[in-house]
Image (tube, rainbow over all chains, first blue to last red; front, side, top):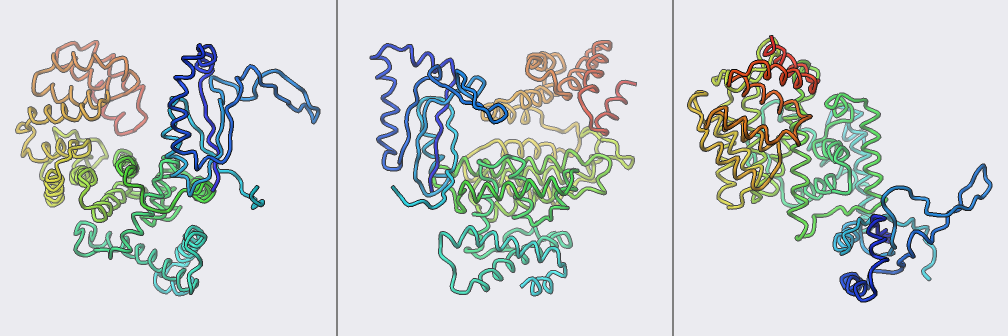
Length: 119
Length: 381
């Protein structure tokens, strides 16, 4: 069964993260890399995302697309990245989420499986 | 199939519901374990098992079978494992607390949606939707139908016990006034806790929770007078306490103690036991009670526990010391009616009448429970 783990963070911490000097950021990545080493065989996709300031949102106004600057999720939280994982059940996905080391929240969502052929 | 069950239960709606539940269980099992050789027989067995549960549950109201745990209702191991899987699934932390409660009452205790709705004074539709949504999440998010992993067991058991305790309190605290029309949710919760103890006999906190519930239930009859007014512990007629139940609770606590893992439910039960062991209010061992609250605060540092400890100190160390403790909690408990009611009592002890009245008025503003309100009104006049 496939799930997507959405890695959240507060906007403030995301900014701090961006402002870090290179060496410090590398050190901060160490636990994340460890996480991927540990669970890598279950991760079947995903990416870290560029910061929110790079986001562009297309909204629809009476069906007419309107392009706006910024993310569509409003509030204090932002999504920093996501991973697609293939595991047996929710408990296994939750175990991975519980081990996520950044301190930010992780939303676990099952993926709708329409039975497409595996690529 | 429904017919066979109707014969067994004498209740068509119920039989139909059990068949539907068996089908739901099949939905969970078959994709993983394969379709059994005789699917019809599998369904009937599952539905029959649910029907047996139902009959047992009814039986307990007749002769309190539940109190004779272990002997009369010993589950065979396979069936017991299956029940545990069901309980842990119903109380999975991925479900909201209210969904956990409704699902557990429905699927484990066998209450109908109407009964659950009555217990929570809400509509049948609300409960039915809550259960449907929860079942849908179990299927869609693939919440596994199995025992938690060893490393999660502590956490998951805590979750189950928290669900049962909430259920119990809902039943126990809300019984003021119109209890005749309400189902006794507290008894249901105690039955479920008894089930947990039977299925996991070496979990001290499960034993502690069951003991705690029994100690409360043992005093239930003395809590209200004939007019439905609250009778405070101090003024209760202790002859009306159910000594048999108290005895069984103390045995459970002793059993828990031999497992050498103290926990919040055991400590709360021990505090309740201190009260039931005193033959009169005057004989209450407040030193022991304060010491137990100290231990409880260490495990569960909550302001409500601290408030209760302060109340115990009133009797051990006097109102001055207790009031000082209470007032340290102002920031966190300002919107809790018992905080102000307690403060009022202490101020009155100290002869500070005007301040006591102000605190009582504040307490009244903060509770809607009619029996609590009546008690506060009486103190005001």
